[in-house]
Length: 224
View (spheres, rainbow, N blue to C red):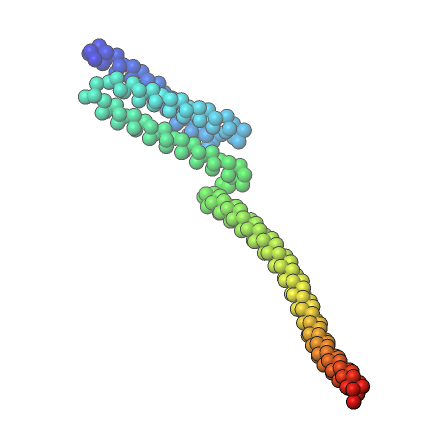
């Protein structure tokens, strides 16, 4: 890169740098004036400050691009300036957020003229946080109670089902015992029938034997 190009790049960087400083000066002034504004004026001033912050970041990005065109021997000091500028904008952004939040709390709780404003606001904020935490805890307790009730209802249904199943098992057991009694009676009946059949068979054989003997005796008497 020629000496003329280096000079042009440096001048362009300085032009953007001048624009950034103007925007940053305007931004810091608006942030300083913000707490003294009324609640009606504050949203507009806050929005204007946010636009200036965005414009500052855009200029910083442009400066970051232009610094690459500066000779490396001189680039270090410009990079140091860029880091400082970005740190200042980040701080201004945090300050704006803090002031807006503090102003909103003041609008919510009212402004006191004594030296305990910050303490009172902090206490109110802690009270709100505690109330919100208590509400979350209460909601969790209600959810736990609901789950416990549902679990108890399910457990009661299970116990009812178990009692019904126990009754069914007892009825089945009684039915089996009655069936066993019927089976025992049937076995005894069959055994009795078997004994009577055996007795009848013996009697029948005896009668047949006697008849055969009588027939033989009748035949034999004819030859005597």
